[in-house]
Image 1: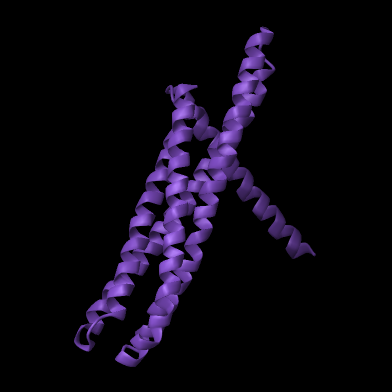
Image 2 (image 1 turned 90 degrees about the horizontal axis):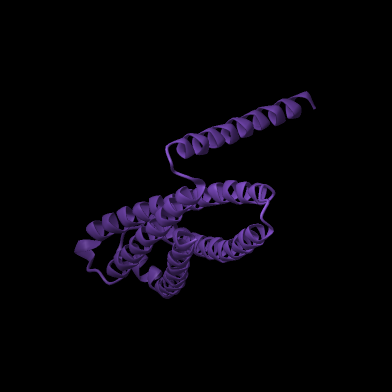
Length: 217
């Protein structure tokens, strides 16, 4: 029981430290004229760019897999090396997407909390109602955005898992018979990549619309 409590306290300390660092960061940025709304625009834009990069990396990995399945025996090693490198690039791109989404969620929480608190400071009721209405609309658009981002994120895992399986299997079975055995997997990978790209493009469009709304506000 003592060990569990110690772990809990350690985790709590880390959480408080990270929370404090974020608060200090936002405070420091505000002092130089960069508010949470501006940071949110930046982070949504960065998340959008990371999704665009991931879309391209996954498309490239699919192309390498297609090339490998249709390659001649003499080219197997080169094609395998290309597929392995494309998979690693896709993994890195996927991790970047996840980190960018978390950054967006972090600043959105801080922004909306601040906005809610500021509503109580108005003495002009019309201004308060207008700001509250704007907050509600922004939250609604944000909910659509983050849902779209998370949906695209979830589509990455089936593709990564399939590519990882191919790379690991071929690492020890790089021959024509093994390649023939992978042909049945190609259609599934193609379908999953197509769905991923569709979700990515939807999320990118949502990001652009959300940035436009914030900048207009």
